[in-house]
Image (cartoon, rainbow, N blue to C red):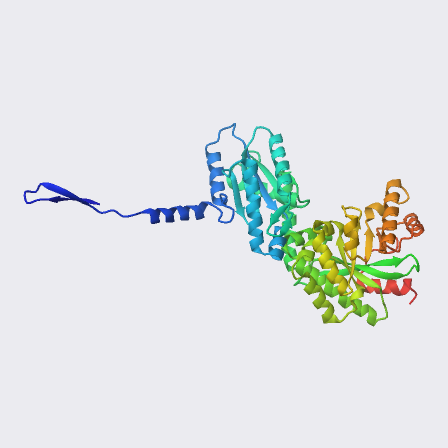
Length: 461
């Protein structure tokens, strides 16, 4: 505001100006704008801004315009947040964002659209360009991350949709990319292009996920037991507990369908605790009725094994029911063991101190280091059924199985072969001094009542 000063003759002699520093207001406006359009954790554009860009591209498009959107979802990111905390999770998101910046040289067409999801907007000439970019993204994002004193590895699933083929407005286009991303999630560390057939498949997956949230409280799960037979005595000496799910409406849902979903959304933690407790209670009931097994094994998922309450949960459950801890065997896969072998050494040491048994499942399918194998405090190695299947018909499988048995015997581990389905396989394993077998040749997994009857009959009790 400027005003003039006049003398007695009404002649202007001076001007008075009043000014106000608007820097603070300007800073506030910029801050509000930044909050509105940028992600506070990574500094990338947020969903609002990227959707505006997509809308503008479509509005200004002509018949030759084509572009792609890629939606990236970090695999099992929730497990990192749950086990290591949100602070570590946020640092990981920042490093992922920085890798995206490195690949695309700027963040203009990048966005963090929420949680562990990112979106990329790309112009392209040929679909091969998008394939090349997707493969680059998978490779770069899966490389190790160093956070404080932690070495972390994470992968991503990518869904891809093209304008105008897969959607002519921002909402349809992003929904198509999201649908493709869900399909990529089934195998993880992969990318998928949207197809119309995907919609029904994704709808089915989402229905299962919704049912899964209510399954525990509705008491829809049960535990089945598959017998493990000693080749020395030909008696049932143990069992593997396996979860089964039948909804209240009568729908039977395979573990191969719902376990990956439970791992992804974190429900595997309470489900795993329920399996452990149910198995222990059943073990006590078996013993009360005269069935004494060497052990019952319980599968442990990667999410459970990494959870910061994993050991406490195991120890508290054992103390609660006062069972002999040596009768409980925990099974982890070879891939879990080698994901962070130093952590596995520490955890297995504590389990061993409590006399809890440990076995490596699916042995031979991963990349175990023999030096770590000795440090893992193992009791048992389980030969994967993919090798057992070829016994009697595949020389390669016979060589591999023989080598695994010799290795286990040398290290004084028990050895069990899973997936035994015929006499030829049984005889081969017997001749090679395999300790234990499990498979449909003797029995499929049974409910507790049928398992009890089988043991009494099989062991002549």
